[in-house]
Every structure is written in C-alpha cells, then in structure tokens.
Image 1 (cartoon, rainbow over the protein chains, first blue to last red):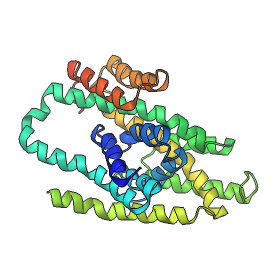
Image 2: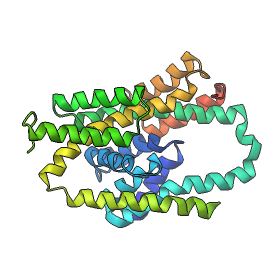
Image 3: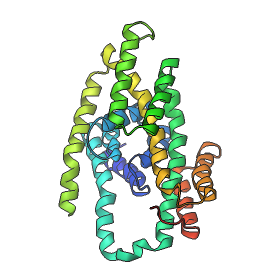
Image 4: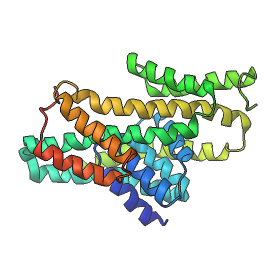
Length: 177
Length: 105
C-alpha cells in the first residue's frame, strides 16, 4: 500500500466518522481484514501509544500509519486525521446555521451512535488477540470498571495495567520473563 | 484558524510517531513485551469505554428504541451480517436523517 493509498484509506475512515476512535472499525476492516498490511496487535498498540500521549484519540492513525509504511505512513495518518477538520472548518463558513438543522444533527447522531456499536464489534477481535490468559481478562474487566466509575485518564489505566502484568510476570504468576 | 488547527496537531503527532518508533525498536525486549501485553489488555478496555463515551451524551436525549436501533443495529449488522462499517455508517446517517433524536444536553 503506497502512502497516498494509505492516506485515502485513512481519510475514508476519518471523514465518515465524527469521533477519535470511531474510525477504528473502518480502518480495521480495510487495512487488517482486507489488505492485511496491519495486524490487530499493531492496531491495539497504536491505541496504547496514542492514549499514552497528549492529543486527540484519533491520533492513533499516525501510529497505525507508521506500522504500515514507516515515517511516510505516519505522515499519511496525520494528514488523514487533519483533513476532515480542515474541510469542516471551511464548510462551516458556507453551511453556518443550517448545520444545526434537526435532520443534519440527526444524521450525525445516527453515525455517532452506530460508531459505538461498530467499536464494540471491533473490541472483539482486538480482545481475542490481546486477552491470552486469565490475568489479562481480569485487567480488562478492572480497566472497564475503573474507566466507567472513576474519573481516571486512560493513560493511568494503561500504565497501571502494564505494571501489574510486569509484576505478575516477575513473580512467575504468568509466563513471559 | 486552519494554520492553528494544523500546527496544533503536529507536536502530538510527532510524539506519537516517536513513541511508535521506540515501541518498534523494543520489539525484541522481553520486559517491554510483557509490559505491552498488560497495556494491550487495557487498550481493549479503552476501546470498549470509547463506545460508552459515544453513547453517553445521547442516553437521555435519544429514546431507548433509537439507541437500540442505531447501536444494536450497527453491532448486529457488522458482527453477524458482516456488513462493511462504511455501509453501516451510511445507513445510520440516512436513518438519523429520517428519525432525528433530540439534541443532547
């Protein structure tokens, strides 16, 4: 996949969704399942990396782009991430108040709600690939519980999970070290 | 405004790029790989929670029927009928156009 093609694949995903990780299902279907240039593990690592850095959740396309095509892939990801925002700013000048029409917001709401359903569909293969022992399942459940009930940045859940698993491995509770 | 938008995203993107390159170079390090396995489990939790965050603003404004149709319908279409995400989103946009929910407060 060339950088330009990669940009277009990413753009297809970022331009048709309205929130950071909501583009994940389109990218997973395109680059993991159809073109086989990215793995579920790399996609999952991209999420880890971007939730460990400041900035929007949609930034994961930069990491995913790097995994596919190195530096220029990352540039393609960044360009695809910013293009819809640039177009939206320009469009708002022309569309103005019409963007607040109930039918226009209804269409956006439909896409956002459907994105949630698609994200949960996507969590299944990512989970199958990432959850390989009971402790990782416990970490997943605890992570959801903490994020659901506490105002904690996802960064701290990711860092905490890495430390817990590392500690378990060094105590030989799980394999790896 | 456009320059600010583009310039604002560059430092974060550079940081993500740097971290990805570091991850790539650590792919043979056993300790780093173990830590990453733990982090990956948490990333799945983040993905699940992102779905919750997307639904939350509409929890009160949309009817339970709308939530069920849009969220459940998208899940079922992709998971069981293997409809492509893009088609699911297109149908959801058209359905939202015809059946708008109240704006979230």
